[in-house]
Picture 1: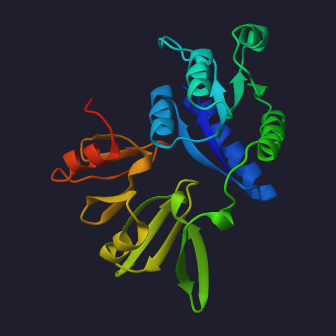
Picture 2: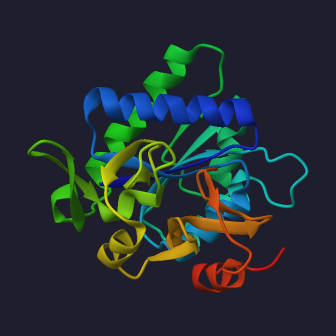
Picture 3: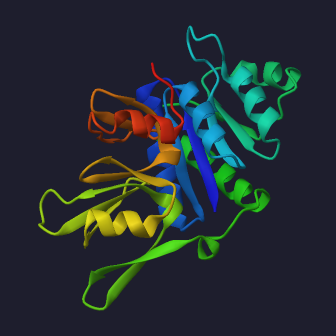
Length: 251
């Protein structure tokens, strides 16, 4: 399974990249998933600090007035994980040579364009290349849970792909699993029973919410913020404990 990290400070381009990658994965049934998608490069650095490993990055070059640019971020990534693959997504086609001169080993380049099909082809190309070159556990090797979703109908859900679980707001006595790829599954269960079955990476952020602490990037105003931009409720009583166990610092 290849984990994918996407970072672009332009919200429109970020959403477009996420949509393109998800489409490629779903259409071609690739063993890959988006682990983190964010506008803030600090979220990326925090995520990989808490979840070390080899990833495929789709990284913007120009982060505006931030102190670091895409090349600086790539150097930090490569310093800690040399096997990760970095694809630069940029509207500055002339920066390719500058990147090469910087010493950063680029896995490739995708040009930002209004032609969605052209960009889609770029994402598809590098997804396939990364699957060939990045080694990792296959989905079958990952710890998973078996969920009853119908009469004698089960789905197997890798535990690492669970972002958070909450009491279902629509159906009584059900809980809803939210995954890192944006999907969700509702099953009959209790929050307490789910917490016992998921392991040490999961903690309560609210009496009706369990979160995967590895994906938390910040906690503020009664909300847990995840690496992919998703949010879940956090009670005032549990805020300090969530921050401590998730390894996030006060703003």
